[in-house]
Image 1 (cartoon, rainbow, N blue to C red):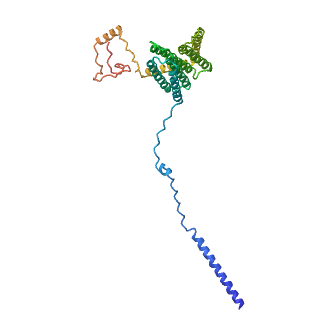
Image 2: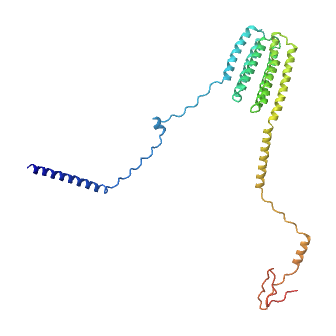
Length: 340
């Protein structure tokens, strides 16, 4: 009985194994017949983000640029104006108060001149870096010197006239020095170092000369006599300024020879191009027809005077052929004799 049970168990195990092998074979046979998977389309590229998507809200319009503040030149000028105004108030208590109408009017006019010159120099402050300090010193010098002249001068009948011409001299000389410095330092821009050095030294001499010739106007109001040596030094400084100006101009002319030659070549090249363009635009010239000579006219007249002969023909009335020269060919058979 035990052997029969063992045989039945082996038989069942063999049947299960055969069933599993058949299922695997059916699966393998069905796999090649399966349809290939359809290709998956590529996802479209994401659209560029708009400003609203990036920031979460529409971009606000750009705010206008903030206006710039006061320039350093203008700030310092205002500070100096305030300081010199305080000094002018002190001069009211120190100096002679006689002729107060002329002095007060002159003070307001001096302030107006200072404001006008400062406004003019402020517009030029952005062009030259050196111009601001030179103009600032010049304007402050004018204001301080004229305030001393206005409030420290002795009163009198011609006080207003004296203040006027002294102010005119100080303003004219000082602004002439500023203009001279501008021209001199402008010559040295972008040029060799020797030219820049001579221009700078000449500018310093011009400033010294201007101070030496205008300072006595304020010194005299304190009843101080200017010695003769002072004026000799002032004249010597002025002569040195003229010498430096002459040397600077000569150096500028020498160093500018290359630039002038380049400009001359450019002008010549442009003139040649314009001339070539003008010639190309002109219509071609027509050769003149020579006038007929008298002998040609005589030959023409003889030729036209002779009557034209009819074209020769054969006996049957047919015209004879023409030769290479266009004349009747009398050499063909049957042609008549040529006329004599």
